[in-house]
Image (cartoon, rainbow, N blue to C red; front, side, top):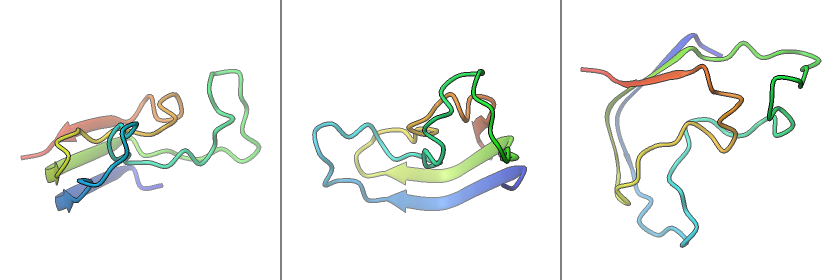
Length: 82
């Protein structure tokens, strides 16, 4: 994965979401087994270190989430760039 990702001028139309919707996620949960530090990947991913969001909006008003697997992306810094 790239070291830094910039997402700029993105409008997410999530106005027709189910009641259980928690908001859009930046990363998919592509390794659901990695839920704690004891898990060892056979081929470890090099994860992104930083995501910069510039003018990113959702019609639901819900903020972007990092992932359905927050442990896997716990060290990723998400910031609003100017």
